[in-house]
Length: 142
Length: 434
Image (cartoon, rainbow over all chains, first blue to last red; front, side, top):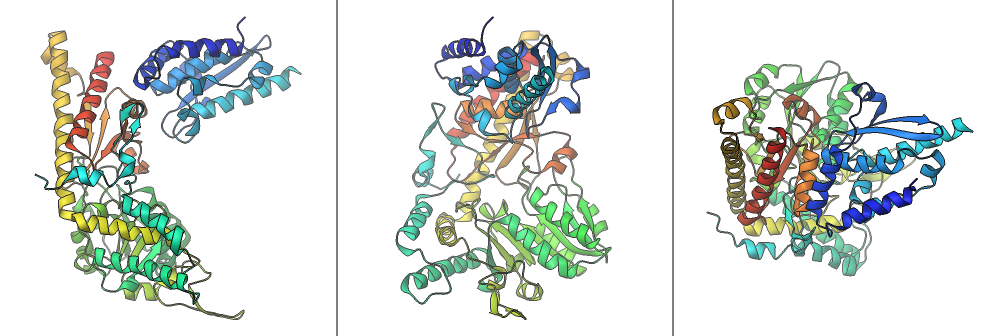
């Protein structure tokens, strides 16, 4: 079982191949977004919408056998790629591991601006939302 | 062709000489804010290095110097918009505050239950919300002039809306999202014919068009410094003397008073009545240098150059549509079927006959947010989103656009690079969606 740190390091290694070329990084992110498993339309409701000014993210969590599982989608391709990475990192992890983890991959792959501009995209709100779910599951579990 | 020496103009803007994401910066987000020439930056540094003092009060030399420089800007803006009197120019922190000032001060005194305020479909939120707020408070009604598909006002509808109930027409002179130049002179004449006041939101217009408030005969004009090569945090409200005199102060505090006792306060004369508190002195002083910059080049020269860039951009975007269609035809060998069954790759949003150098568009099949990120990867700064005009976007049936807006320091070659980048995105998107 890979740790959250291991998965992030693998992602960073893959992105290093692009040598900081932003255009290639964005194309790669858009391709990654296509690998995101389709989210059932029934789960794409207002309740599970993480709002951003320009890009929206839907996030549907479940809690099975002490682990958090995430379904997610976005209406924009680049955000969807980042959402895919986030799901890869945090899905199938325990609430404690999610809460104790630090997302260092975003800056390392040159996408820190996605974190700074909360108004323009739902990605940063999604990170907060997943941590809130993890916290809620943790208290349920206790 | 434009007679301007764009290279020497560009050399006055240090910010333009940098790389973004490893590519030379191409700044096409001028409708959001323009960059600042060195003279404006130097004026700010000089003010804080040598002249900083509070204005209009102390007897010392620095105060006199800063007061003179502050009032110099007022005289410069008076000349810039051809106001009859310098006191008709009030400093605010921007267009938003200028409009709020009128809505709150004029609106509170002169609007009554059942009165009507007319705005247009293409207003920026800053010329919608202040009127909604005061209308709600006073029981007045907000009416909206509709537009056609090109993004032009339906003037017949405006004619029908003007009634004895109308008290104010608050109208954007140039649309920030579409670039449409509204027929404000006609709007004002028609309003005045029935005794209605007119406020113009001049945020976008003042950097592109000649401004003569006496010729226009507008009652109020809201101006932004930062869209005119000046600092942020400075705006101007022009208002006719008799209106400003009849209006109560907007905010209370220092500067706006004549005498204060605990029983009663008498208010200062115009324009100070509306300038409560210490103003943004340094930025106001630097704003003069921005106006000097525009005056030196000349509005007409600026407009000619910008129009050339706009035409080059629009022609280029339309050519991309033809190119992508041809590519499909070659690969599919089904040109007829393709041409009739698929949307064109690019849809222009805002095709009014009278426009400034702003072009909104959509790459069909690609979200504007992704397009904005992809263009940024090539060092190109455009605005994407709803441009603070959500009701307009709803009317147009889109949730946002890509907007390129050109300024005097932009070049033909920059538009070429931009068009090439857009073409690449359009081709890729068309491939994915075919």
